[in-house]
Image (tube, rainbow over all chains, first blue to last red; front, top):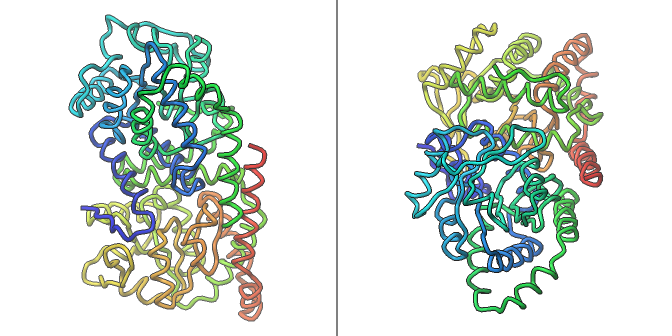
Length: 250
Length: 250
């Protein structure tokens, strides 16, 4: 029905928005997720709707950290599942990371819907849905958070696309290394994570898969150097500066 | 159910969001509208969730232009109808502007729902729903846009809250004078309009009604002077500057 003309200057952004709305209709995404997506759109707009040089650096460091990890896990919520299901599965394959459904607005039904959706897109295993493996970790402002004993609870590195600040801080307190994908460089998630990719997940994940493949033959020493050379604070400051530039051009 | 504590730092913003979500449940708002609202929330956040001095100036000029207009029309979409139905009706009464339903993601059913909703809130007449009066105007990147022959097609001044850039540009090409309410001072709508109110529609409309009442006894010469003295480019630059400040604090 709603055909988006490819000539529309915001065609790509409108196409992505349509994917979230489709996910909403399928029950993967909640209303709050739609509003959160819109907030992301505004930040992406400030970013120029492109992957910055800083984001590329963060993506490379994230790829190196994932290759070094013993038990990496990709934490997936409704929005991530709706936007990039195939890319999540591909990243999981390329890195050996397990996939875990982890929701802020959780419900058993939605967890199962998302798990089925990911399997439909090629995932062989999806954690976070079997209550026999469920355990809880302390979280500051929300209910205690449910995680999978085989997944996030046991992970050394967790990828959190589109995550809430409390959750990221909770993961940090448990000693995990966190890779965040967050369009807001000022968010608590962005600041709490070890590596923050300030980019749209739709652009960032394919680049991350490429980066993992590009680095797969490097030695652990080389990979460690890439991670150590990455300065998240400086990278966030640069991302913020790029956004500020847009305001000046306005 | 979802009670919002008045102590919550973002209580007002959450209350407004609830109105959009309620509108979605009623079928007035589409999923894309929820995302668009979230996008607006982010811009409002940068604005400090307040009406700036610049916005007040634009509101005054808009009120003067509406009082000068021969055939003013308020173009209403789902989000505007959900957020400020009473204010739309009140502004229409105070200025003699006709109300027209005009949707980006259009459907006959939703048009009728919105018209009924506006009537429920006091509107005596709602244009844009009777196919006998429907005509089309050229629009660049989307399908040709449907308008009412008695409304937007015949208007000299059109108020477009929350409008798409293509539509605003199409109206300008037809020689209309456009008053936009848009939280993004860099948008094509903001730049194409004659008077752009960079403010949340929820705050701006009541102020616009007050301004119309305050100016209603002024002569046409005085009103014309107010409109002529208003510089939209300078006003947008000032709004942008206000937002830039927030980024610096980040």
